[in-house]
Image (cartoon, rainbow, N blue to C red; front, side, top):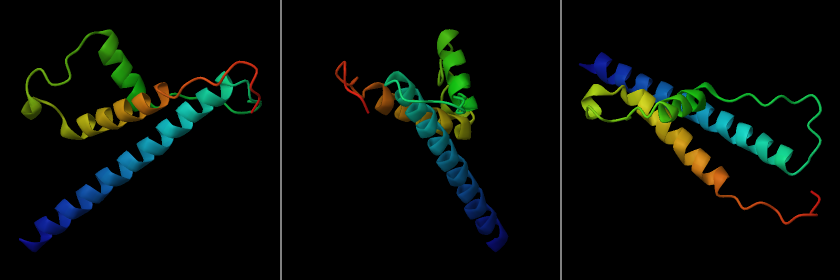
Length: 104
């Protein structure tokens, strides 16, 4: 019985680590987009969209329901990723644009 508890804890840590890395990647992506929008120098910095964001945007474009079959039919780890992506995207898309003429 003890080994199963250990494996459950390890799996939870790995999921938390993966979601933490996804959050960092999303914040970096949206941060770079905001810097580009404000006209900051972006020499040598490429903006690469995180894979989880690409998957979510594809599902939204194809109008695929994320939970149509109920949560039991959905991969729960992917749903956690989707939640992280949607939350971070909402935060960064609701940041107001700076007034014109403001230099950062």
